[in-house]
Each structure stands twice: as structure tokens, then as C-alpha cells.
Image (cartoon, rainbow, N blue to C red):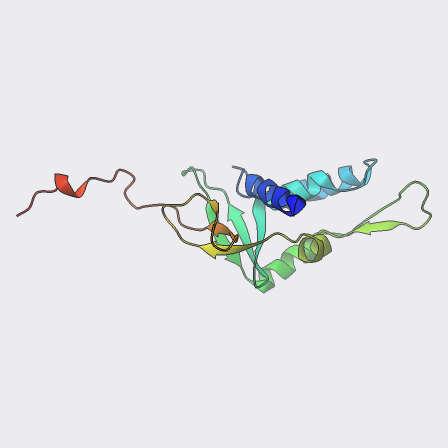
Amino acid sequence: MYSILYKMIQQTELFGNTHKSFNFNVLKNKMDNDQGAKNNNFTETKKYFLKYFAKSMGDYFYKYIPSENEDDGEIIKVPDKSMNCIWRQISTVKYKIEGIEKLQTFCIKNWFIKEHRMNFSIASEPTQDRFFTSKKTDTWYINISKGFLYKILRNIVNFQMK
């Protein structure tokens, strides 16, 4: 249970924590660099991908799009056809582990869909943070609300009654 909670917290720290747009070339460079690393767990590749993509219950995908004008970017639901385009552009990497003769493969699609078990529910709660958890259900949520329209709320007593 601790490792699942740790991974959820780790993803909530990553998702949307960038001001740069997603770039396939950066992802491919990270995959190439991780391919030559000793531990071959593709940590930097996974971290980069998780800054931009999240999975919700029901196998829907969400993408974070940074905004230059606002503090928070936009979270959009990615249609299946668009995700298929993303998966086609990301190649599978083959790498060698010392002591094992057969080449190993890393495919970010397989990792994200099958191994990465962090699923969120989607909510629109202007009073909550970008990520929040329900104490009743222990469900983690991605909040797609950007907050209240008016940031400075006036007390109802301050309004004139006419």
C-alpha cells in the first residue's frame, strides 16, 4: 500500500509541473539516454511523460497543456485516435542487461497502459487543488477546474441591498 501511495504522490508532483510544451524529440532523447543507463529503468523518460499525461479510471487519457498567460495550464481529454498517433510516434527501445543474452525492450505505451497503475478520477471542484483525494473513498482526483471566475470574493454583507 505504501508504494502505491508513494507513486500517486510522485505522479501528482509531476503532472502539470512544467511550463514547456510536450515535445516528441525530447522524449526520444530521454529514451535514448536512459537506454544507455546502468539500471535501465527509464526513470527520466517516465518522469517526462508523466508531466504531460495521466490516465483516469475507465482508461481515458488526459494531457496537460502549459499556458504562457496563466499560472495553470489546461487539462484536456485525449481522444483514442490522438493517443494512437502519439503511440505510433514513440518507438520501442531495445537494450542489453549485463548477464542476460537476450535484448530487453522498453515500450512507453505498454508501461503506461499495463504497468503504470496510477488511475485518477476526474472532477471539477473550484475549491480544491489540482490533485485531491476523497477521505470517504480514498480516490485520487485530477481537478480540471481553474477555480472561481472571480479570484477576490466579496462577503455577501458588503453588497448593497436595493
